[in-house]
Length: 275
Figure 1: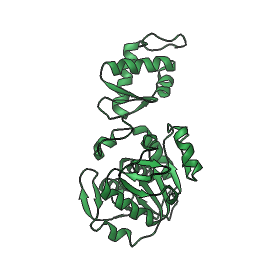
Figure 2: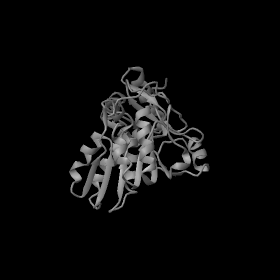
Figure 3: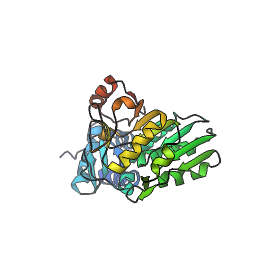
Figure 4: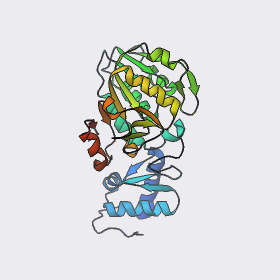
């Protein structure tokens, strides 16, 4: 394991002080990138990676491709269970904020929007509220956390909650009754989260009841947009939401693997990423 300073490091903090600050950033943000650490602390990528390796050896964080997350956060590409809303909320904080801001930029005043349940769509809700230019927006959601996040934008926004049976794990509303509202609306946009996006498998979710509601949302919108971080690309799960062709656009994070994105683009899916 490398621990020595790189020759190109300039006026860097002593290693122990730098690592204390790196650990604080990881704990506060939920995710840091090697490139961000290099810029912030004025060190080379080699040194930044060595710092993360040292902190991982101490058991205080977990290394992932391009950066690190707090210790205890699962980093497997395919989860073996459905994470709770709170577990997902502390994972990949920066990518979700990036996706949320980019997705929210697609919304114009006067539009109707369906917001699926999830932590990435929660980031979209917060980004929409922050856009003071938006007026006369109707948002339909099956997420209680999302509805509460949108509340400060009332009366600029009208917020409609689907109703239905409450799933505590995601604070989501599913059938029975969720379909009643969704069958009566036709929105301009639907932002739909998922656990997997694959050329052959389509867009899928780990939970069947929520996959069913997502399918209803897909049918209730003129334009359907997938919001998913790069770790979900190429994955296929139990509940099929719809074929890839049913979706207009994928909004994903800046670190998504270009090799994984290429076949999705070739299949005709527009891909948007933060710069």
